[in-house]
Image (tube, rainbow, N blue to C red; front, top):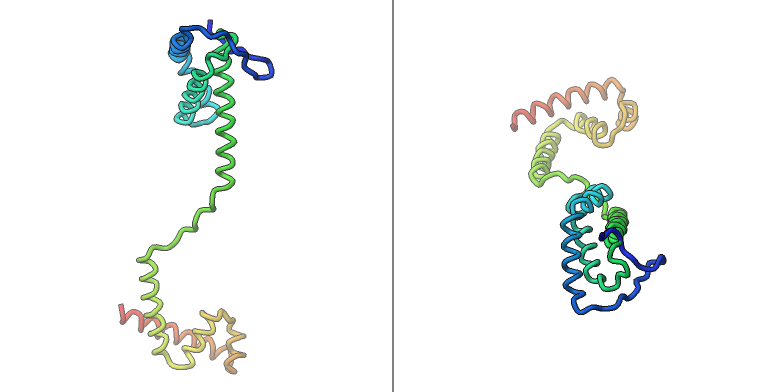
Length: 186
């Protein structure tokens, strides 16, 4: 009975003669359509949108639009086809909107360390710097050049004017002394 909507093939509505009880007829017809086809329209929209809540919104919007344009329907027997097409068009519009939103969404902020982590890191760094300051001059230089300046043993030897063996020896003794200093603080 109410299987599809009319209108001009180019999508225009044709004004139908108005009746005194047209509003009541529209309400009754839409209630009948809603009762009979709401679930199937929501299922169809949910398959298109992959979101049941959005599908329900799309179907409700289609029913509201149909209620507002009921008098312009030439053939009320085609109301269901009109509703289906309206649901499909609204689902397409929603998907286009979501694509734009995704494209324009700001990039997520990188994961940041917690304030506690930053405070602990600062304390640990201060402890390391204090322990480093208690080391003998040569050991401190070798460790700073190796771990802060990221120089190789050969580069450190050249920079300090000592042999690579001396660099290894100062680094080994400096690490051991640094470890002892840090363990005694903890």
